Image (cartoon, rainbow, N blue to C red; front, side, top):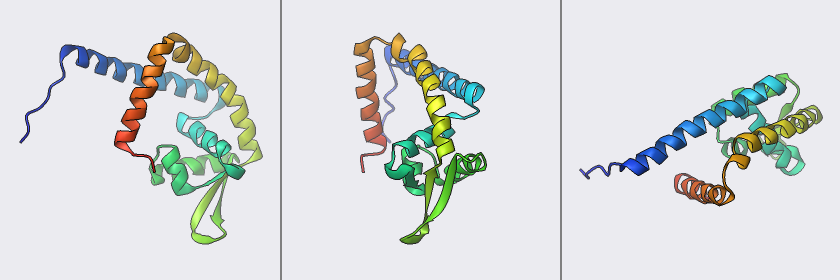
Length: 153
């Protein structure tokens, strides 16, 4: 069995700062979206991904990957969005087993309103408080993490 490579004091400090900061940031973003627009961060992410897709639709499996959710969780979240009239799910015309999630006009309108506030919150608690050089380093670092965990398809 390989010997454990323990973190040194500096690595431990940075790791804990990342954990603490990322949890707090996610909580602030989620609370802000819920309070002002009645959306969870997961719901918001689905609307964003659909808004960016061709014809505002994606296969559920592809949406799950893009939104970093399990298929089961995505199905429940889309169900909530569907009940609100923000998303519609339809069977794929060329593959009866596949299902598309479509962003509705109402969903797009809700997203447009939420996006303005959300970007402001992201700026207030992340972008504008991190030095530009550090922000670039964060982007590089988490790009490397993402590639290591889930290599590009």
